[in-house]
Length: 150
Image 1 (tube, rainbow, N blue to C red):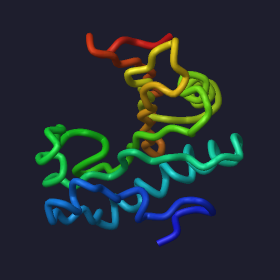
Image 2 (tube, rainbow, N blue to C red):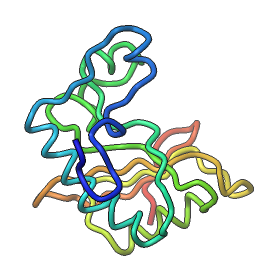
Image 3 (tube, helix red, strand yellow):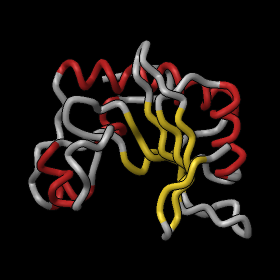
Image 4 (cartoon, helix red, strand yellow):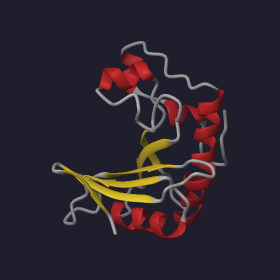
């Protein structure tokens, strides 16, 4: 199922862990709608801006998949949401990309995770979107935990 010009439902739900462990990682209609809103409000506009493919490293996760990987079933990747993904744009500084999102897009939560200023390719970006209810919460995360990103 095509969600936008450059994104499909398959890439937003694919998981090697789910495949290896025969876990159904199929979202329901509401979750598909949430995934589509994330794609159309954040990912596709970001793709258009950078004119470069976005590598989705973790999108929607079923409750069974969350349990298998040790993630919370309350994660925005999971359960009733499906409204978050982790990603990077190869060859672009993750901090610069996250800053662009922070300053130019609507989002619910934005986390620059495990970024090291000495390596522009370090870490990844977590972003979620909730139609009409975005908190615009910006955080960083490293081995010591979460911090507000101002």
